[in-house]
Amino acid sequence: MKPFNQRYNKNDTAFFWNKKGAFFIVLSALLASVTNSCVHGLTSYISAGQLLFLKAGVAFILCSPWIIRYWKNIIGSPNKKWHVQKAVFGAAGNVFWITALQTLPLADASILSLTSALLTTLGATVFFKERLRFATLGALALGGLGVCIVIKPSMAVFSWHALLPLMSALCYSASSLFVKKVSVDDSTIVSLVYLLGGMTVLSAPFAYAAWVSLSSWDFLLIVSIAVFYWGIQWSLIYAYAHASAGFLAPFKFVRFPLACVIGVVFFAETPSSYVVGGAFLIFCACGLIQFTRHDPSHLFKTRSGQK
Image (cartoon, rainbow, N blue to C red; front, side):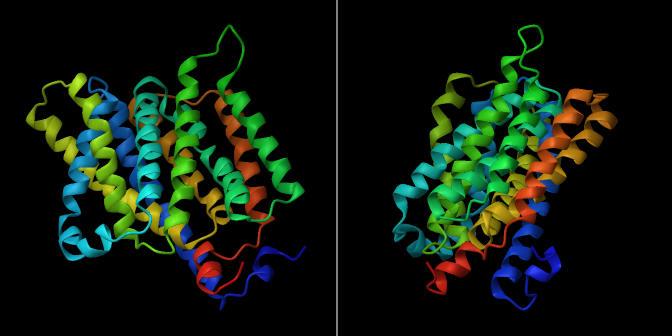
């Protein structure tokens, strides 16, 4: 097998989009680190449903200029059923993730959530026929072992809360794959409007059932989270619409060292040896997936007529 820098032609359109997608994945990870730390430390008394309703609703309002400008494209989307399903998985993933941030150490939740990289790779193989090599299967097994080490599945120490980021990762993976499904016909902003609007509607009943009064500081904090969340979702949709899911997988892992630093500095949370050991195996798994792949971006393949 050729070295990585020899397997890609820098003038190749697919390679350009994969690199650009990787940049936006890293950008989303940086923004997510800020919002995750806010949710982890400052919103524990707000239910996951109410927090999702407010941050998705405010982010949806931020889309107003594009809704006015592109309303015909939004209404005329041929992928409405896929957008609805994406919103369902996105809302469920958010609820699981917010609850995980409110109940688990930041580093633990972050590393377990990054199993979405492995799940997205597997899903892309099943639904988009991206090639599955034996090395990829080995990487998935290695990542699964890393997860087992992190959650410490013995009756003495196991916490059911550890399943929350895993469920979130599963939902986020499905949501990411729906992005690739709709990206051929719909722009990033159309997908974003449907996602934010759908999650706002879906979370409204849960928000109403557990609503708590908010102070001016709370509202300002949630608006700030919503602004960052808009940037996170735009970056993720743009990245997965243009680049190979397998190529993007390892770049999500910048979130883990950031979470460790934030946890130590702001919350006095030192990652356990289990978390560090499991993180190492999951890092290796996603790195192996990335190193053994040479897939052009999904959007490039589709638009160039390749099957």
